[in-house]
Amino acid sequence: MSFQQGLSGLDAASSALDVIGNNVANSSTVGFKGATAHFADLYAASLGLVGASQIGIGVTVSAIQQQFTQGNLTTTNNPLDLAINGGGFFRMSQGGAIGYTRNGQFHIDNQGYIINDQTLRLTGYPVTASGQISPSNPVELQLTASQIPPRATSDPLSGDIAAVINLDSRDTVPALSPFNPANPETYNFSTALTVFDTLGVVHNLSTFYVLNAPSAPAGGEWTLYATLDGADPLTPGPVGNLAFDTSGALNPASALQTLPSWTLSSGAVSPWSPGTMDFTGTTQYGSESNVDSLTQGGFASGSLVSVGVGIDGVVQGRYSNGQTRNMGQVVLATFTDPNGLLNLGNNQWRSTSLSGPELIGTPASGSRGVVQSAAVEDSNVDLTNELVAMITAQRNYQANAQTIKTQDQIMQTLVNLR
Image 1 (spheres, rainbow, N blue to C red):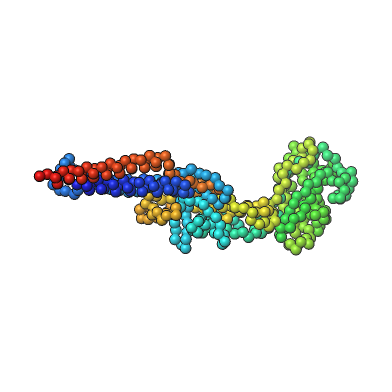
Image 2 (tube, rainbow, N blue to C red):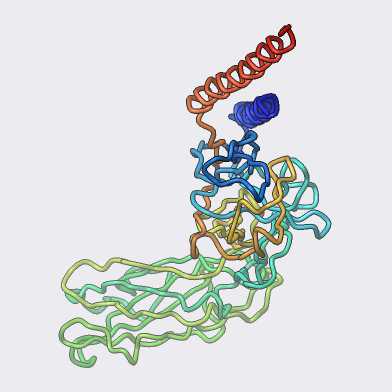
């Protein structure tokens, strides 16, 4: 029996060294998960022996278990390098075959797909035409480098022009009238704002504020005028009035002012109006007239400049017009038993009946970790531990070899009996 015991010990120690050697070899492999060899003792099957008198016949490798512990994160210069900080796997597709990986070294191919070094495509949730994430069946994420279309200031998606200003209650009625945008003595205050027509062409919208005569309502009233690129609207005259109470607060009934229309020569929709101007928050206090906030939601067309990924896995494109747009969302897959996954090599796993089905979700949901852009997850192999384990396995191998040598000497003694 001793030969069999020693031989099984040699095999087990050799397997342990193989596992340790594989760990050491992959100590610099991104996303690699180290493994450990598990051992079990062997006993001969017998119905006649009492358990206390059984002698083992050796050892066997019962399992090789991977350790799905977190590896350190290392930053890179590639925004599409992704690291998972926590649980989960990237979900990859190759011709419809689904695999899983922790290696997030991704780049874009000539068709715009996000791929790894083995040309497997990263999957995630698609987006609608307006850039909204559409949680559905994951698809292969494909980025487009086409320009985003312009959005006119008048577009409902742009919202109203928002203006928060203070008009000086100490001002007096202008000395000259009627209003003339070219003559500052005919108005008290003016502002300017860039707006965009339906082709994304830039226009300068100027608004002018004229304090009404002392016969105006208590608190004060200002008349609003507007020009576009210095031109009067199709219907000349005031846009409307801004009325204030004696505390300097704007009357809500006058907060929304509908801007007039102008004839455009840019080829865009004409006549065209920038829409509604919302003065909510505007005041009339005894301090110098000034602009606190003046915003609008239109923009020109833009070209893709860069791509970034948030901790929630949302892939965003950044464009030359200062806009950002969602281009997809990376999903992560988790499993009831990750050790039941089938290791395919190249940092890839495949689900099996032992691992259970994939559980798909967005990063930071459930037990899934967050995604860090411009970073990769290092191998979780601890070289110090592996080298110590290597010494231990080497001693085990030597000890088992010694039992075989000793048994051989005993057998030689029996053979030499006369």
